Length: 385
Image 1 (cartoon, rainbow, N blue to C red):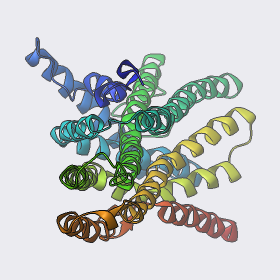
Image 2: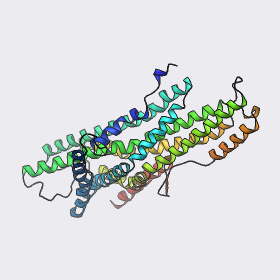
Image 3: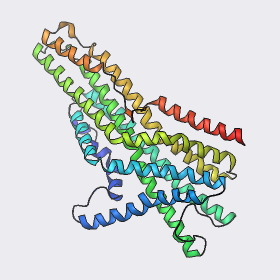
Image 4: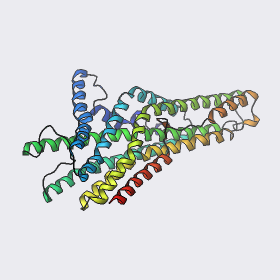
């Protein structure tokens, strides 16, 4: 295999994330640091903080159950989105450290078949998560504005969501335009934040699972090359043990970056999904709103599913790594090799999963429990009808 066919580095894979973080005020501009700081403070005060705050305060003034449900479908989501946004902001140095670990793991790949697997399996899996969220974010943005326009023409002027404003939004055309633009741009900012918040952990877990798989393949091939001496085979095993430790470091760093955000995301997911479904069942009466809330419901589920899916995938690959250690030709090796192999096996027997807040495992069982909670909320609403 020609080495010019190597896949792009991790920085290139996460280029969209760094671009969005730069737009949202997280990555200082080297030439204009002071001006950029003013921009970051303005943007995050008005939208990352102001947007969820104006929705949550609006709950205090709502009387109709329909308006409360409509508000809850978005207010809880954007509040959690802002929390995850600031959590990643404070962990940007760990994000850079994680990219360095991934680059180191990529540098250890030296077999054409391993490169092919990484380029054709691991990277496409990570990219699919990003492409899925492109569809969700663009679909939500377009259908929300289009649906609002249709509703305004068909009935009367209304905002995207009932919320608090320090002025009367329907008093004048100017007030309405100001309130509408604030909600529209605020929604775009929140969607951009969700794009990077909800794809980063899933993409990292997809790459980590791929590296665990490749490490298993490298370990399983040790000892079968008759041209290598005992010392060379033992050196290959030691290199694999070093990679194994890198996987541990990567696992721990990912947990530190996304743990807090996923904890609150999982807690709120059932409530948000339940409110969206209840609102669709009882209050959506036209095709345009139906399309919008269908995409929005799908997006709410995708905030949890990809990370949980690749969390399960990583657990599976890590468990398989123990079996791959015994697939190497350890019987024909010397005592030093066997002793090192025993140490590596002992390490691999430690169960590796992502646990957030001491309560939730990031795996598919948690996602199904979230869906079950949303269904239970719908069942309660139907029984009270």
